Image (tube, rainbow, N blue to C red; front, side, top):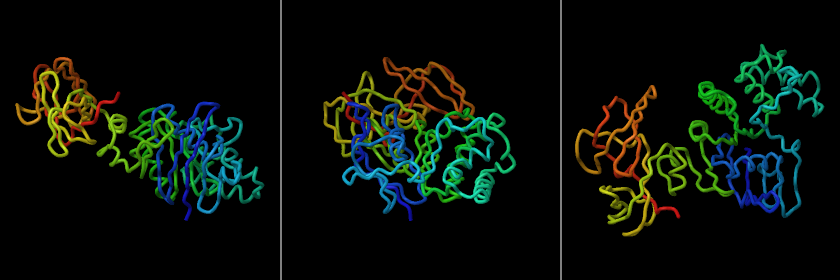
Length: 355
């Protein structure tokens, strides 16, 4: 059973700290996505595991095999870690065939020619590339090039595969198809995978668990459903999903719900952290949780529908109420003008206002 363990990892570029004591585990057969804004440290963390970046302190191990331990002065080079790595750009040699690209690492490791051919063909067949072995990268589509890069990572039968933005160079439609295919491949082969992405939809679709990084630390970890449906911090709530943010003041507290008041409105919200009356707060609600209602009622306010956007499977609306701006999704077209809009109290989360 291979479990990747990262403990208290620190890494700096000169005087600039990038990783500030990151710890996590990747269990056998688990897919974990590193998610976060640009500069959060997610790519640096992946590259440190692969030994493409040099940590200053901490420990990285695969079960009993120590890759890096600052206290014991252990630092295994890339080739001794035997981890599969898929680069964002795929990094295929244009002058080598598909088979030569996939098998080059085996050649460097002095694997016999017959074993090279067997393992290369097996990897290509697994990914539906068996008939393309003699083609060059320029003769392949973007999706096929992606599969060649993955075949190259799988040819060693690695215990863990590291994926650095594996779908980012594909167009939007192909990304959706590739996302489903890649998740199916990882599951069918029983791989353990650590994946970097900036795309939250991609992270939720592909992963068993998400590590949300912020400024070199793990802000929150959990299943996609936990991070999306039950955020514990304002940063997590705002980072995940498409949201409306409403500035207000806490005017009453009733258990785990609070009353929020603003310019001409009052809303009930679920308090996601300790709040007190008179405190400045911010309410966050997912666009799909805002409902256009037929008339007045609990937690509803009247707002002007300014414009509509047709998205194919739904409509997106932009509403104005005084200085307040918010959006909503709906399955049916709505006429411009005034409408009642409902913010369900359990789906409207209240946090202390940052800053």
